Length: 172
Image (cartoon, rainbow, N blue to C red; front, side, top):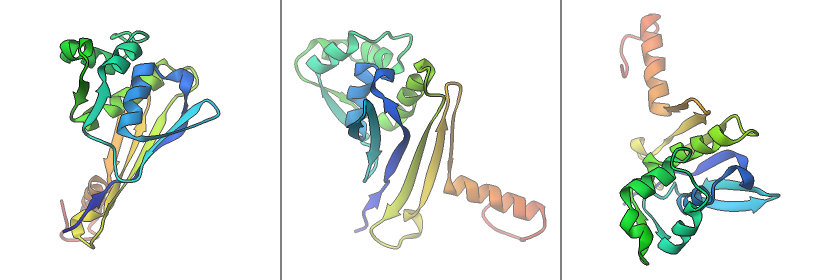
């Protein structure tokens, strides 16, 4: 059996003052977090967690500083989990891979000191499988999240090479 990994790095380090408490609570569950000099470094050796659990009491306390109009995470929690927030059980968030980039973008949007963040991912596998290697690069600005995988990059290379007559076939 093959194991697939997605080591991930978020750069630059994010000032703690740029994050809302709910965002920091969330990001520390999605990624590994290291704190140094009032900044947070987010990374993961295996890949971002797609399913996380946050204690309801911690979420309630962290949401006090958040406004739904400046935090998509706060909006999502208040809109989709109002009963769970008031309860005592852990709040379960699934499909965090669809949300963490938005959380990072909200941080960039509000921060006077950050104009972008980058996310670099490596796709690796414990066996030499064709589908087990590659990567992804993401540039997050206040306006846009740009992302490209090695597969989409190769697709572009093939199209350019075919258009230039360099190759007769390939992955279109």
